[in-house]
Length: 180
Image (cartoon, rainbow, N blue to C red):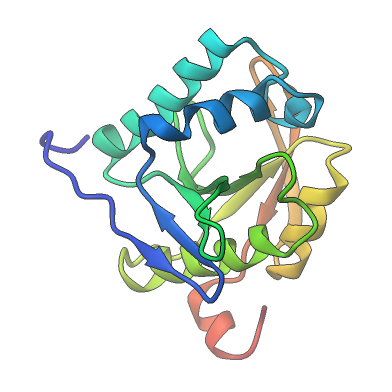
């Protein structure tokens, strides 16, 4: 846990700004979590439960000192998704995770943001490795993991979601040697 003081850094890529969650992100957030597209990440759910998810994501920064950023598209200023580091109680280790909101899938944003977050995790935070936890059948997330150079490693038994695939990302040295 942190001492209650934390800062959410801003990360910029060619097309994206990764920034702290804001209350103004809630409608887009709730629309995604209320849709069938959220079936792989605990949805669909109600706006009230989506609010709790957004509050948990924000609180993760306070409790762990890291978390998931809101992904904003530079060209439009629209909230495109959430990408970052996740490690709640009971998780196997720090995860690099991504959720793209409705209308933003299929444009390479998860891969672009994932690379930037992974670089931050390795370079600024000194982490030696990351995993991604993906629900079976989520072929879009598996494709992102593969584009990032992750390799399917095993299974994590989630208490509510059931068996989840664990994908291991290349370590910093492997990335320097030319891995994804």
